[in-house]
Length: 441
Image (cartoon, rainbow, N blue to C red; front, side):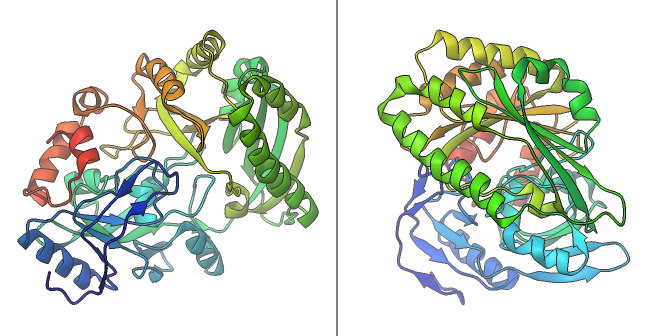
């Protein structure tokens, strides 16, 4: 393949969760949009597929390819800042963990984000990554423009002026082209007051509407086999509020020793002693202590996650959450599955992005996890059936079994998105087995 971009010998690629892999024929490391376009044109001429990959943090095989894999690690950094509007353009390969402090140095921040930050910006947005907050959308909702290389190597600038392309491309699944830059509508840097404390799950469900609506960001973690939960409330503070971050000792104890080191041990025990899991979960739930602190938004949103796992997450209508939680509890109690990971529940506002899980719907997001050395399939399939009873929409970067026929019923603009695929990538240069399954061949 002739290209100006360097390649390395092929080698197997594996994602972070160790549940997806690929053997690309070549790996490209472009340093500019022009080089990405060159790779795409060359691969298309040779009848090869092309996929971009960032951190490999998706649990699905959405980035896998048998053709040319484009590593976006050299297309990074802040490219432009508009001080008047707060719009910031970044290279698509920039990681969240690098963007947050870079924005903060400019006095800016993303309006919302999830709880981990290794992802590339294009990977996080293309799969619909979100945080929590009933009045806030996912990260892609902050996109005001992007640049994308289409199937014939054409470079397009996507703005709200082209409503259809803008509606499709912000959560594009990598099916429309290779995103090379994104422009975000940022907000001034802000402090969050974090309040975390244990609660009983029945109390959380009973008070759910007030907990969600009366806080800027609310989420909770339920420990299966118990009635215990950890609730997190994060709220913006008034100007002039003093920053009071966690002490280094408290951070090390709570986030590193308990949430990572000890939790790794618990899961390794659970792998061999499944019968111990209910008691271990009860101990973990009782060991939680309340804490409060005030810090910059991205320092509050992000938690270190060093225990490797697999994950499935579905968006369901917010009103259905109590029924879904009862269904999950009943399924776990009726099965012989033991679940050592807490179940995470978050909330987000509707948006207008065609394949966003939040499209035209206020959602609760329910995420289930399993330790990476344990078989997740029966557990996930059992819970997935419950989500399916409530028009659940799977997170595009997390494990699920739905295909195009099922997904078409969950998204009003599904076929409109496919039409944009036909226009930008008529020869399916950017397809792989995952996209063929979820979009149809």
